[in-house]
Each structure stands twice: as structure tokens, then as C-alpha cells.
Amino acid sequence: GHMSTKADVSFVAITNHVLDAAKSNRCVTLLRQEPDKEELLSIARGILFDANASGDHCIRRIQCDSITLRPDEFVNSLCKSYTYMLHNEEEFQWFELFFGLRDFVFFLKAMRANASMK
Image 1: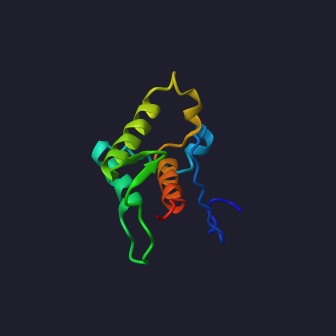
Image 2: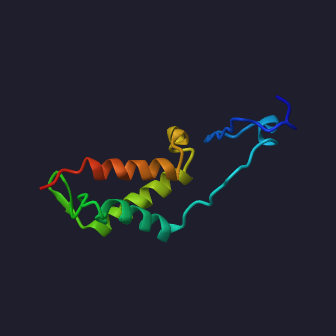
């Protein structure tokens, strides 16, 4: 139908790709700033180490082979590594396929979901 007639169906598309000029003149673009260090640490701590109301388990210690890390050590290292990879495009060219904060959050959720309970 014509743009002047009321549509029976609406459509919302979400993409991580930059749209060309023809598409972007008909859309709303939401850009979020990259989180600062404290916000990134807060996101990681919240996902990995906070128990939620449904009684879901949360990680209390991190052990990799014979090394045991405190939660804050682990979160700091993880966030520092993520930020380093995000800002060093020449060294980590494959990381351009990583969609940023959204994928980082999904990565953290997967770590929590697959953490072994001992």
C-alpha cells in the first residue's frame, strides 16, 4: 500500500550492520556508547557473581587447571582482555566479527550457565 494509508502490520528490524543511505533514511538508529571500565566491570560482576531471585546458581570461585582466582581478579582480567581486543584491530582482525557488548554479555551468560558446581 501507499505510505498515506494505515498499515495493518508493523515491522521492526534489528541489525548490527551499517545500513546504506536508502535504508537509513526510513529508520531510527540507536547507538550506544562503549561502556566505561566501571560499567563493564559492573556488567561482568552482575552476570557472573550475583544470584538471582529464581535461585539460579552463581560463580563463587574460578579454577583453571591448578590456578584458583578470586572473582574480582577474574572479572578485571576478563574486562581488560575484552577492551584490549576491541581496541587493537590490527592484532585481532578476526575480532571485527564480534559484535561488541551484546556478544560479551552472551559470552558471560554462557560461562555462568556452563560453570561446574563444586
